[in-house]
Length: 93
Image 1 (cartoon, rainbow, N blue to C red):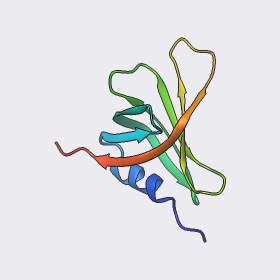
Image 2: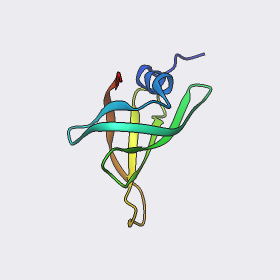
Image 3: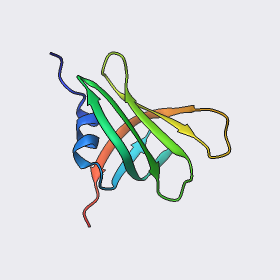
């Protein structure tokens, strides 16, 4: 069996507590995952970013190399691909 994606595993282990994510070059902030689960090695999650009304979805790529992120505006008609999760940090309270 293939290994779990390192970034996805870290996100899953921090969930449901808030975490600091960097997504691509443009998005950085505090995210909270409402749901997160693995289906064998495939990761899926949904959550939100502090100060943003959009919904974010996270999933591993087919080759399990990266965690990609989709964003849906509250007034939008669909999902927009916004990048890959570049880093995950636990927020210590």
